[in-house]
Length: 147
Image 1 (cartoon, helix red, strand yellow):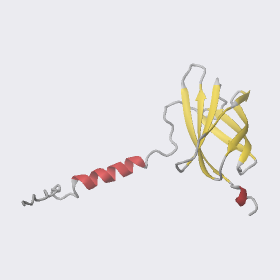
Image 2 (cartoon, one colour; image 1 turned 120 degrees about the vertical axis):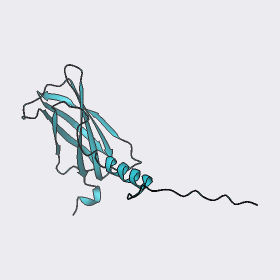
Image 3 (cartoon, rainbow, N blue to C red; image 1 turned 90 degrees about the vertical axis):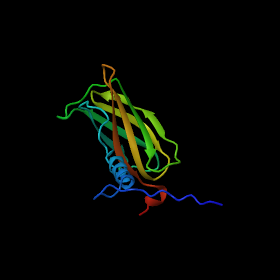
Image 4 (cartoon, helix red, strand yellow; image 1 turned 90 degrees about the horizontal axis):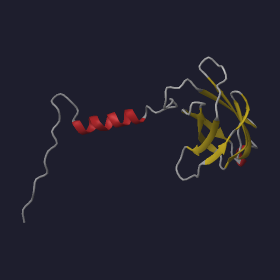
């Protein structure tokens, strides 16, 4: 029975090695996502809930869509997808109703569980372009309300 030697991994002279360098790079790039827009459209969204803080169950959501200077932005459609920050939960979807230029309402957005949520707000502009904005939100569970 012959034994095949395991090849040695060579490192770059004076460096830390190729594989560890690639792992560090992947971790750094993965952490750069943040809440940065995925497009260059000058569209911002402010999200307000009633009640505040948001609770499990149906809540009213007000979405103010504006430009970088705070001026209302005309949109043809606004949709909200809520997803929890951990895997395993079914996302919640709602289409907002226009109340005024720049103001959209979701009368009953149904948070199914307390915890940290990410809202993906999709705004369709009159020319057909879409802006997607992220908003983080903590939702109080039923047990949290009494404290």
